[in-house]
Length: 319
Image 1: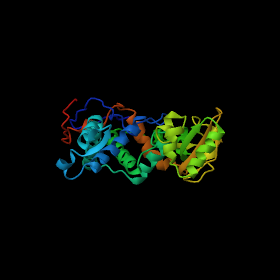
Image 2 (image 1 turned 60 degrees about the horizontal axis):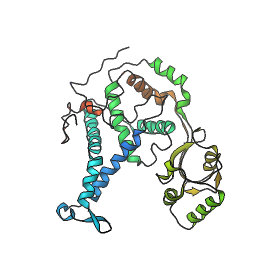
Image 3 (image 1 turned 180 degrees about the horizontal axis):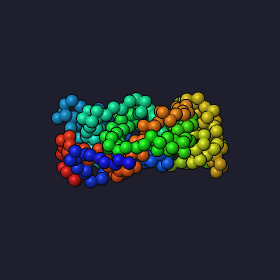
Image 4 (image 1 turned 90 degrees about the vertical axis):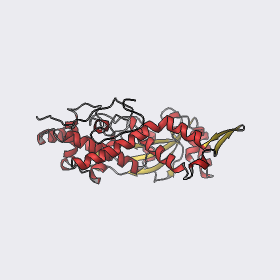
C-alpha cells in the first residue's frame, strides 16, 4: 500500500477549536460535537455584517439596549461579539477560501451528490442536537470545504478496491439510513400541565418560547425544544417520543405523550427526511477516502495549507 503525502512545504498551525474537521470521523463513530459550534460561527459573522450599517461613524453611538438607564451602544455590542467569536469566525472563513484555492490547484471536484451523501451519513450517526439549528447552505459549504481537504490529503494514498468492497460488505447497516424526524419537545411533570401547554399553543403561543419557559428538559429547552433529527431505532430517545412523532405531519403538534419516566411531553415534528439505502457504487469513493484518512493524523486541518496559499490574518501566527 502506498502512503506518500505531499503538502508542498505547507506548515501546520497549532490546533484550535476549529481544527477538528467536519466529517473527520471514522464510520463506526459519531461525528464531533464541535460541528454545531463551528457552523454557528458562520451564522454570527453574517449577522454581524447584516447589523453593521453602511455609515459606521454615525452608528457607533447608537443605543441597542439599556438597563435601568445604563446604555449599551452598537459599538460596544459588536466589539464584544468580535472578542468572543471573531477569531474563530475569521479562521473559518479563511479555511473555506484556502480550500477553494486548493481545489483549483489540485483539480479537485466536489459534486452535489457527494455532499448529499455526507449529510445523510452525518445525520444518521449524530447526537440528537448536532445540526439542530443549522442552515442547509452553511452545512453544505462546510462539508464542501471538508471534502476538498480530505481529497487533497488522500490523493496520493492508494486504497485497493477490494478493501473498500470488504468494508462495505461488513458495514452495510451504515449505508441503510432510516427515516428521521426533526423534532421539538416540551417536557412537563403531569398530563394536566401538558394539556395546558397544548392549549397555549392553540392560542398562538410560540413553541420555542414555551419550551424555554416551561420544559423540564433543560438541554432541549435551551434550544427552544429542538432535539434535532431522531430515528425510530434510536436508543437514546424515549420510545414513546419516537412512536408519537412518526405519526405526525410536518409542523403538526402532538397530544400529551406519556414518557417512560412518568412525565409528559408535547411534540412538534418540524421536518422529515425519508430513509435512504446506498449501493456500493454510490459510496465506494467515500469509503476509500475514509480508509485513506485513517492513515493520516486526525488533527490535520485546512491551516496546514495557509502558507502554501499565502493566507494571512491580523491575529498573528501561533496566537
